[in-house]
Image (tube, rainbow, N blue to C red; front, side, top):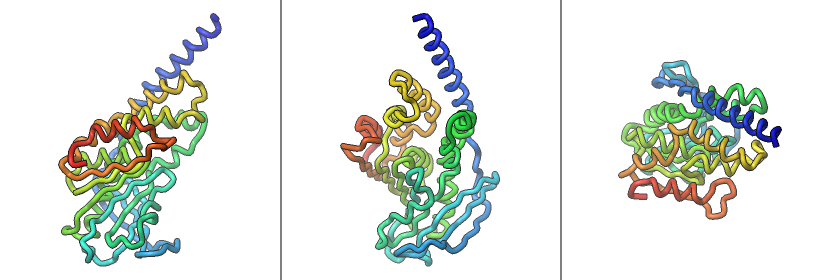
Length: 266
């Protein structure tokens, strides 16, 4: 019994220390769009042409993106230009999943922090503050990408935002603070991020009693992009939320929290 109490005390102290350390990761700064490099995309793809785009900001940050046609601005169909943020393993390739008949421009970018997420063990723990700093700065990256997309699509072209899965929190946070997107779609994501984390930490945190504690700490660290805090400010622009009742990764209560926090029309 004594050994167990000592173990629980050490584990609790480690969780508190890790949580305090994690929250110290301040968001990085992107600044404004400074330069653009484009090149042909070498991956065969049906539908409109796709080109590779590298965006560099005034703070020296870079974003690697894919821009999907049409080539001549503005879109002759009047379709909005789409800024798309997909899942972690999708990144800039999210535009490849759009219907080939879609006539508007679309841009999606890699997450600058994707490589950090792939780390494991001690290397991952040591980089948690940096990872947090990168993740909560993602809305800034979307703002830079939107600036380029609007420039390419033409000032008269409407802009819309799509966040899917991991892209839901940063898209909601960006659209809440940026008036340029006229409509927003959030697909297969949710609010109350700690619930999402708790539902997806079973492999990384084996202990059932420790898992919700870790999830709460991580949720607190990601509070700047917590969708429940941000999604309400998208109104009165239209918001579309799509989810599945049987999604093993996104708890229904998390989806309901997101939808409940959103303003009309939704």
